[in-house]
Image 1: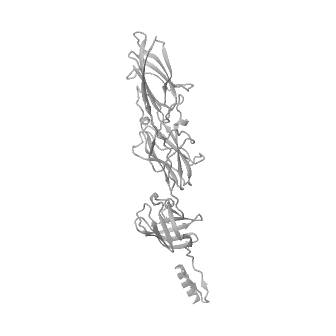
Image 2: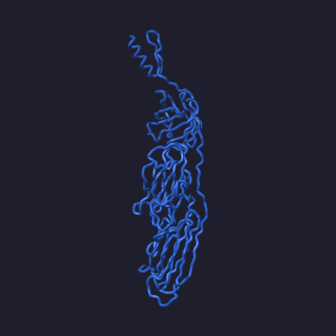
Image 3: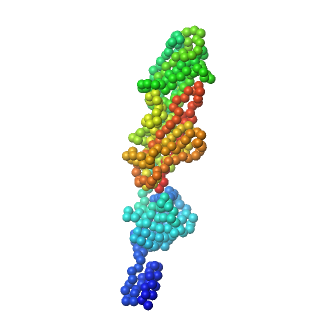
Length: 411
């Protein structure tokens, strides 16, 4: 008889009722202490940003919705139903989902007074985070400094005195100081010969940006070049007669040049220290041009980088997405923490060449792990054509077309 009673008591205890043995002693009942859950809870993450700020009040074993935020729930909906303790910090309940159906769910109460809810085993990235005190997210800072840049054109008539003559024009092409830089187009023209042309940076110690004759091209009497120019840098021009038959001297030639600016409000941002803060979730634009400081633009030069700073208020993954990108611009991405250390392995190329890139496709780079709230940096390295012989090629697309991007955090 005593054995049967104990079996019955065990079954009843599973249903959270007390029981006594034959001697009148009360048998222990499983705990259902909901005291830690009582009161208000605010949702701060993870799987739907529109639900941030949702407020639920727990009274006894039910959670009533007091603030629906941007969800489709209604005030006084029973969001959490039949809460029951299953372990010291674990609870099970029925959770009202956006489909207005109740699903099995679990709660985990943390030592930091944080409640995490897993609905129908939805996976770690969809676990909801709830806290006692809701702090409105800080407004993202946008360090874009708008400015206005104007292009200009000039023309100069000169002449050579004899066949061996050449003319030099130190700092003839002067880039304005606006931070985005731009590009120069320069042409020297003579009706009788194919002019020779040499362009160098004023600070360059060797080599040349461009050193060509126009002989053999479709327009041999006009030697034309275009190159990316760095803010505040001047460029030297040297011209000579080149190839052709001259009827008489002096031989007149004309030069004309045009400067085309690229307005990039996030420049200068070529280093971690110069990184500009960008807002999350907003499509922004910038140029990927890297102008000549010396006579070379090499991979890894400081001016081939763009840095952006983001400040996160909650833990999550960090994603940089290209919303659009000129097909002739190559961009590689890295993520760095507040001390500058890379947090996600090596650079990853997120845009390829014109043969593989499909316009309108979003390319993105995302952190492998979830990182705590703090300051992070997106580091982009640019690669593309920096000088063009206009007798044979045309201006690259990316010189006139910005890339657009969005930085987000996935909580």
